Length: 461
Image (cartoon, rainbow, N blue to C red; front, side, top):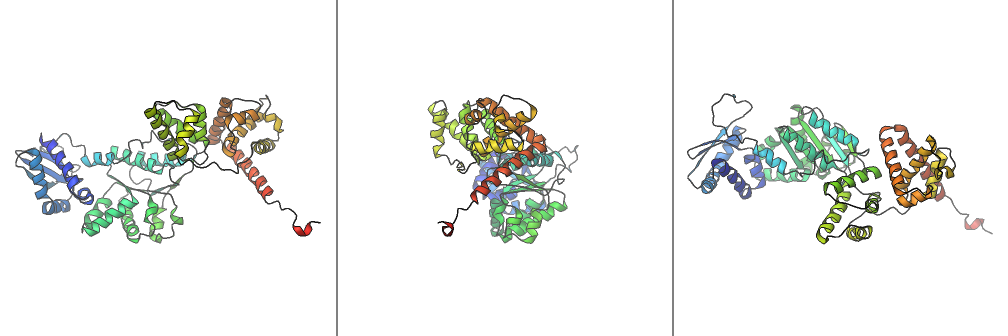
C-alpha cells in the first residue's frame, strides 16, 4: 500500500470511529501534502484546527495510520493555503490533490439531481432559471434566494443541482437540511466546539439549507442562522433556502429571521400541469429504458394532484415489478401494481365534459357543434384544441371520451391538441389568459348552481 492510499484509508477509518460532527469539523478539510520516510505532512486551513487536532486527535490518528500502513509513522500537521502558496514552491505536492472534502460533499448528493434531469415547464420555469443563474454568476450575485413549494415539487432536486455545480466549479459548499443543521449545532454546543462550528459555516462560499420550515419554534437555530447569514452576506457569498412554507406563514419565527429568509428573490414551484406531468413521466420512462402503453401513461398523468415525486414513485414501482416478474406492463397490470401506491384521489366534483365544451364554445362565440365539426378555420381550431386541453385538466374524461365528444377524433389527435395549447400558453400570455377566463366562467356557473335555493316549507302550499 502506498502512502496516499494509507492516508485515505486512515481518514475512512477515522470517519467510522469519530462522531460525525467531530470528523466534519476537524478532518473533513485535512489533506495530505506529502510523504517522506514515514512522515506524513498533513494540511489544515487554519491554526485553530491545527491546535485542536494536535491536542485531541493526533495520537489516535498516528496509531490508526501506523496500523494501516504497517510501519511506524509520524503525522506533521501544518497550516497551508494552496491559493496563497507560490507556484514555484518546491514542496513535495501529491498530484491527487482534488480536495477530498469536495468529493465527499458530492457523494452526499443524489447523483440523479442534476440540471440535466430537471424537467422544466410553466410551473417551475422561473425557479429553474434562477437556479441556473446562481451557478453561472459569481458568488453572492443572487443571494439570498428562497425556493418555495409543496412537498415533491422539485425543491431538493434544484438545491442539489446547484450544490453539485458550485462544487464542480471549485466553491466551498455546505448543503444541509435545517434538521441536520440543528443537530450539528446542538452537538457542537455539547462538545464545546462552538467556534469550529461557526467557522465552518461562516467561511463557506455557499450555504444551502433545505426544509427551512423545520426551524420554526427553534429560537437557538434561528439565531445561529441569522448570525451566519450576516457573516456570509458581508463576504458577498451565496445563501439559499428551500421551504414548503413561506416565512410570512411561519408564526414561530423571529422577526430578524423572517426578514432574512425573505430578503431576496422567492421562486415558487407550482404543482405540475398536465403537460409537465407528461414530460416528467416520459423523462423517467426514458431514463429507465421502459416501454409503457399510452393508456398506462395517460392513467398516471390523469391524476391531477400528482407531484414530480409521485410520478417518479409510480414509474419506479412499475419498473421494479416489470424487472422482477418479467411481465409486460399493461393497463390492467399497472392498475394492480399501483393499487397500493398512494395515488392522489381524483376529484369527484369534476366539471362535466358537456359543460366544459359549452363554456369553451361560448367563450369563442361559436356553436358547440363547431367543436365537433371538420371545419379548420383558425378560431375553430383554436377553440377545439383549447377544449381538448381543458377537458384533460378539468374533467375526468379519458382521451378517447374527449375525442368522441369532439367528432370522433382519436387519442393521438387529442394529445397533440393538448400539447399545442400547453406550448402556446408557455409563450403567449393571451392564450394563457383565455384558459383562465374559461375556467373562471365554469367556476362561476358551478357556484351559481350550488347557491340555488329551493322554496322553503312556508312557501309551499
